[in-house]
Image 1: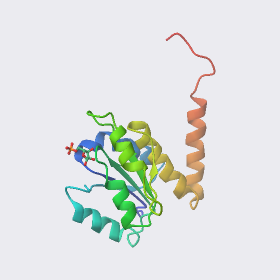
Image 2: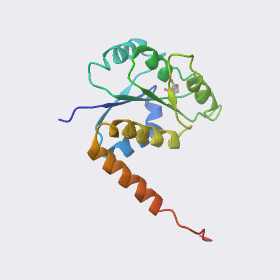
Image 3: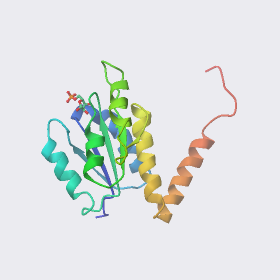
Length: 162
Ligand code: RP5
């Protein structure tokens, strides 16, 4: 089995419909990944263990999605030097602005590459992870370039009424 370089983690099962979009883009690009529910508040020991072992397990990027008091991406970044890409989950109460603010404003020294709120952010997190891996993987780089070219080609030059 291929070495897994990307970890997709999320604070709750309820985050999966959003985080699945990160997984979908990695599937499309032929990048293997693992998925885990890791909550900063409900399963802090699981968070610690995941972060402590991430480097030794060969992870190159961690995509972390959380909503509300979204401490998972930042806490993971504090525990491992593996780059963390944060996805703010869109929440019902505050539309995900709460998640965004909880993730984006990290203190100096512990960065989280914070994406947009919701599905666009999850998709872009997958693309960001692929882009990072593509710096060391020429075949993936070709697939990513093709994916980008296909997207560009799918955009019509003129708008239509329907
Ligand atoms: C966060 O609380 C999770 O990331 C999720 O977005 C939010 C709500 O979780 P549930 O109550 O739906 O499990 O930790």
